[in-house]
Length: 333
Image 1 (cartoon, rainbow, N blue to C red):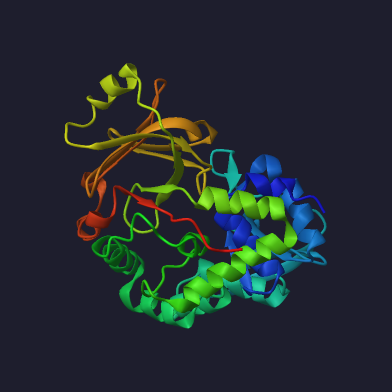
Image 2: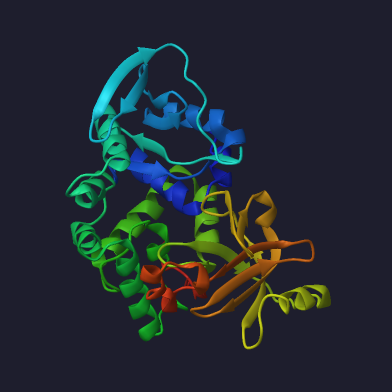
């Protein structure tokens, strides 16, 4: 079996894929599949006998033994029918397909899609169970809400000086751990990594290498851009451009930007996020902790975000954002 297609995925999504194939998770949401890789991803999902779902212009398409078209109403599935040919997935900017659902069981997959796309009491708990997250973390997330849960976790990391040496297992898992000492999260992260290693040593080594990196938090919650720090200095041209956006003091480093978690573009007044293929490669990373992030090169600015663009509700969480977190070397063998 060829895993080359998965080499272009974000490492966390590689872990999620094999966590499902190995039965560690009931289901998962692969949040970014490049359009050019779509057919190959469908093929590898079929080789692993996975049920797969995605959104099209006609509704949700579920592929398993047969092709199923599902239309979801406000709180329930309102129509389902078998179809011969599958319409193409919806894409953002023609770069990637967002939110591709996978599971080993067809009913679990349909249940996940319905829960993810509708709102109802206990939704977070339901999704947490379907996605195989630890019950303690699901309960904490449901109680605090997404932004506050991440804020509390990141705040404790910073307070204890662990934000610069985080265990790799925390970057393997998508959910927010309920505490720094959550043994269930560490155990789950290790299982994910071992699932990757069981299927492909080459992919495992790539996942370890890419997750053992620096992570720029460009907003509150779970918003990170991964990069490898380089022993280089920014060019004079880049330094001149920085002065148009930020005044001293700020922190600056040159790094190799890795594949974003998902591709998208966004802009608001002077602020922007340009996460296309062009953001990957050598860039200069600038940040004022709790205030602003900037990523650029001689050609253009790819990321410029600030506390100022956050809602009043979100601003109270900004002290743990607009900064760099780092992964310590894992002891996984």
